[in-house]
Length: 583
Image (cartoon, rainbow, N blue to C red):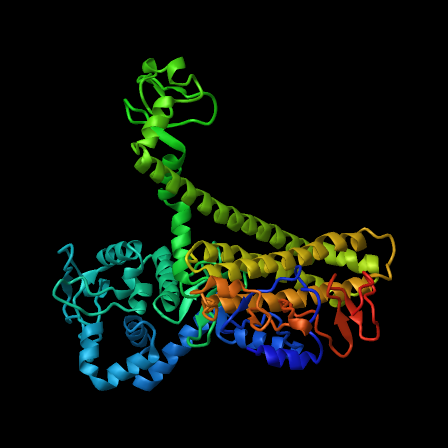
């Protein structure tokens, strides 16, 4: 991450006048430890490298891909160990489809491996007699109607079908099926299943076998989206746990919840549990109700006077404030809207503990509600943005192409903008869960977090408005508009700066804002001109200003972005073509 001096040298000018996302705001630390640069602007090449790297840490597998990989592993192991395909399948199933583990165990102690998996080195033939007795039904049958595994224990066809069918109905455990003889551990391979089982059971067994290749392998998982049939082969040690399936669902590889950067899996689990737990119901009851003095049922008072009547069959009448019987109240105690007894008892400290508990519950509930409502609102906004993205891809892009006489290949910047909005809504949603669990006593971190979160929200709203409201004008136009190219430049610029800002925000939160001095909130907020800003470096005259989180204020060779309205102007212009603000 660049230092403040490096940023200043790279810009080669005075500190920029206005923050891109908001008004000036300086937040400094006396020791200069906190140095998050939200203004780094990555080049197109850098962005391509990052995208390429992220795409390399997992592979999406269709059913045909899974089947092909499974067949390749079976063939390879069968060739190396000089065993049949079905024997290789039994070995791989037992060792969770790890070819290397099978090699290690097999060459270390082949006899032991054969024993534990049920593979006999020298199969035993069925006795060569005219008739045999089935070991399950104890009926006598001709030899040619009996079947046995490699152990040679004979059973009739009906008993085999019943035994196999019952095992398959019980679930994937049928893949480790052994001989029905209680004293025998010989494995039953897929060839026997295909020979003896009913047609429906064969299909189920094949399905279980295919799914086991994913479910038993620690490097692969099914996409958790409802109805999705794709699987993911993940490469460990590659950094991010985020996975985006071909069905467009994004999830965390570690916990399989939806992608939740910048919060960790533990925070997500706590937040989801809290949203569904009964504890919040109890907090609401404690904060907003009082127990009836007679039957103890909780009662909510949302309007009216202090005279309360419990519901039948109790029907006890009491004062809401002191919980005493209403028969002892009247004008002398303060009438219907006050209670002298309560005020006197409160002064004596009789209600301190119950009131304190109720106040704590109320504050806790209000705090939780604050974060949950914003979390849920961003979730709703993300769902709406997903619907708008789908509509743009399937309908509106073609319409816009005709209206503005532009090929669809040159309108991809709109799809990129909507995709970025969807992603940023997700990140912003989870920052509220992050904020809820951020310790209250870490004042500097909380102040820093609330500032960058506010900047992110305002920047995202600006991008969303541009992609939604301003685009509508070009969709409704009767003929091509010459301003469309300016709109393209503006939207592409907003998309770029918002992406960069959110990436930096995520990185900062994932490190726990460790560079922010949480032990001295006063130092973090001081206006000392000699200290470094948490966001950037002060300019002339010791005036500290926040560096632009999105970095759009930086100029490139062919364009520069307005500090006020974010419009991307040609490099030759000295004033913004949109708002006439000077560069």
